[in-house]
Length: 479
Ligand SMILES: [Fe+2]
Image (tube, rainbow, N blue to C red; front, side, top):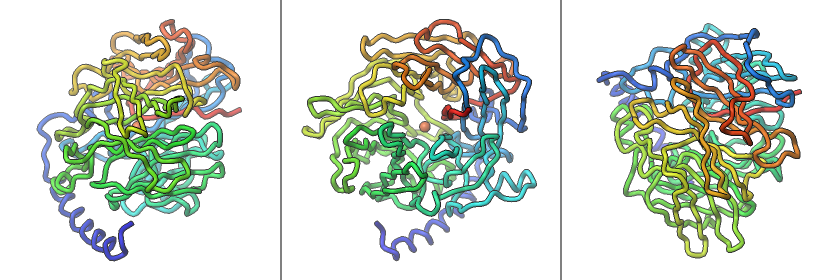
């Protein structure tokens, strides 16, 4: 942990740096269109509530609850030269399903101070992170509440079921520096595990556990170097898996006006850590891996021979250039074997096709599992990262891959698995998510039968509005 003096120096430096960075950011002129402000990603300009949704097929009556997805949607005009996909006001797109009916679709900005000011509303209550109050990456249900969340920045924001912003929250004063967009719920304990980082503290990350009452009960520091960007993690019964990979904070990128100041750093040693779940930071077992980058793992589990297997979408590099989003589309679906005895990670390609946003039956988090679901990525970067028309289902038992193709001009973003009922088998349930209809600027909420993956959708709710791909969503059961 930095000394108080060191923290104070950093604070002074940061204020000066931020001023210079802001000046340089303003000066930048766009050389062409920013793909994350165009086409599929064009920000939505209105909030709507639609209670007259048309449905094709039959929504499963047991699918009672809210499907919610979060993503950036700048409200004010932004500089196309420097706007980065990962930055920008958060918008939640939600659909309420009840007794086989689509009751409503709503989209709402998460009220940061800037959003409230722009909309002429009183500011939302609750404490703020010193640097930002935007939470634009994921939305989860936990401890009876809905939380819009982001990594290394704005505090979690509690949202109401009708997507109104309730309050910004540091979990009643228990949160450390900042939170993560990718907590993983331990199905055994009901606690959420995350790896958290903060640009002001490039030498430390934290294993943060939020208990079933919604308070941080553990915030264990782990020593690192260079300020690594650690987007996600995974858990097994014994370990938290920490991905310390060579994308790190870049002061020169920040000073140069980058709105997202993380860059590929070949000097940063790539390693994956196994932290004993209740151990001290210094107990972590670091295992070498060839340089690569991972935003998202699928599941992970322990094997009888003491290794840990984690499946993930793996890039050879990331943020090696000055693009306004990911600068590689080449994520292969890989299975990593992490050997704590040999302190090495072995990579095996499961599927070389570009793909992302892996999800699985999350009742099996930390346990052996068979099925992972991903979305295909388009062949060309200029398409704005998302833009292919296919979902993949991997049978990790047989090695087979099934494809669900929505057809020309129909682009899915992340799809998630919802079990058919509490005792349902793995893969017995539905895959749900939004599909963008490029030509008509409309969207569909689509329900696929996971076990009949290549078959026609079980149901499609037609939403007469554009829903940008955004990032991550979840289904939250409600009566
Ligand atoms: Fe993510």
